[in-house]
Length: 441
Image 1 (cartoon, rainbow, N blue to C red):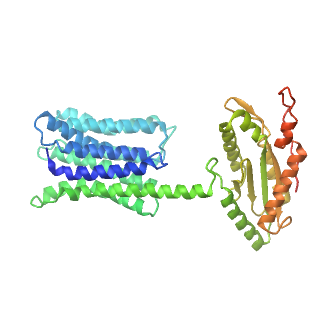
Image 2 (image 1 turned 180 degrees about the horizontal axis):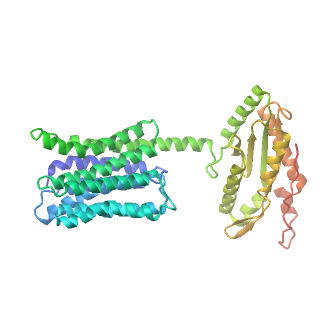
Image 3 (image 1 turned 180 degrees about the vertical axis):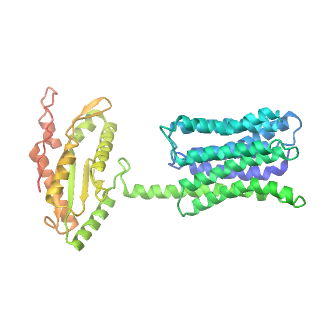
């Protein structure tokens, strides 16, 4: 056994352990692929301990050492795909894992030149064929970058792999350089932000790829120089630290988002709503324009929760949030300000007629019963509108006015929760739902 690799193995195991601890609390789905990649790095160093083994065991250890290192990079690239859920991405990854693993195996075992050439061609042909098969349905710059990168690698392998002296070594370094240079480009594309985590991770992957170019260069032109293996392994640790920082940065950003947004619907919560309303009123005051506040309270929502369950009520709220968000302008704000209450801020230019038109259109979106989990759910909304500065001069008074008008409409329509429940006959049959709602300005 090569015990000189043991300190590196211990260091990587500790890093993978720390990485797993962070992943356990991470909300990002890609973190699982990152952890799988680092477990393959642990396997890489574990297999490296047995490289001096004689015979077939030494060859097997070398194949596992190199393949696990290449596969780790492919998983890192997969985790950095912006089209992570695209079906063809899984086929692409499986093709790359298979082709790279097959090439490394036949190269280490000293297969005939014709088999080696076929395995090199497969590295380019596999990703290219998958890309062309789905080209009409899906295409992305990173997908084509991967195809071009693998094609360049194929040409390089066919050029150097059969050299009598250092052909296999150059081929292996070309494979690993391609994988980790691809990681560098993928992470640069998916994390174009000026943060410590992004900078360290992208720089670490570039240094990791550079190792496979600098090491053979140093061996060829400076054969007498001795560079410790720890120096070549340093980029691995840099990447691990960078990835942990990326997850922590994402978690902090996620926590900030949760502090200002409703977790169920993703809409701004009351805290963010009040901040945006205050800013909207201040802008309207400075420009001598109007701003409108719309408050919509869902009708019969309590009945849906009581009869169909809270999970159906949650689906209903998510559906309402989606349709409301698509109806208003990007400059306006839709917020969930209560259990079944949604508020909309309409900024200038606006007026009472436009606010009434928007309010009616939002109500119309809910007039048709919705089908959730095979059940038809009738729903509607009561609306209250308040205009700044005509109805109120400050934020608190504007909110009170809109709320009062919404409750007046709910009582006038006779579909408030208490009224609706009291009108149900004892036989259990409900009267037909009423969807018409009056609007007060």
